[in-house]
Length: 338
Image (tube, rainbow, N blue to C red; front, side, top):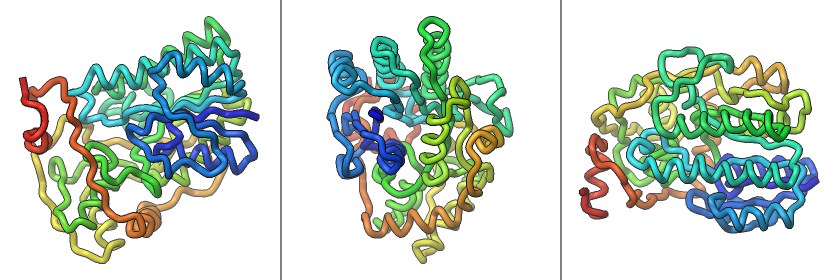
């Protein structure tokens, strides 16, 4: 069977592509390398460089590919930054998704997998359950929920089946540890390897349930291949919440150092975020998720081999009002605020 993985040069996407190849699929990866790396693409996958926002390219890829399955992971996932890059956020995360949905309908793809996010739930709804009413509070979460709603409309109008996954705070090998605006574990590991203090927004007592990639990518592929999972929504990841300060302790242990920490002004973000995963575990039984300490140890071993990375400053800020001062300082060498 032929499968298309959008965003397959990225962190989660490359692991999803790996799993499809392991199961004997012919895999095509479509990625513009804006957040991923060509070396992430598994050997054996066909690679096409380009954006999901390019309607002509998407149509060409689907015409040539004759895909039985599509897994759409291409996105720009930066919740905190999304307030300040609305047009960029909606172009990449909504318009790009519409191009993929259109192509799936035109080419009669039986089922589309879509990675949403627990950002759709918003705040004060714990633990987050699939039946909880979404109340996204940032443009990234709004974009993800908009695509979920559009998939329901595509099912009603065209019969397009889909499976929606809501992973959260996924970390592990191949993550872009140089990204300045997302992937807190990668940011911390890169800062430690560069001998820099760890930068924390707020007091570090905000809680997240961090999910290792080995507990996410294989589960999503298995669910997509299970006909009983079609037109369902699943939280995917770990149940156990940890504070950012606890996370710092585990990372320090893994690298054998006592991390220096710089606490910055708190951002406008959800204080606690963790979900229930009973539904996906009933649909796709498997092993218990890794503990955070086990997962950090695994990722740290990869990061030490990989080395630190310091990514570029995001140069296309659209709204400067209320931009966190730490980010604003980094951008002083970039475009002048209006």
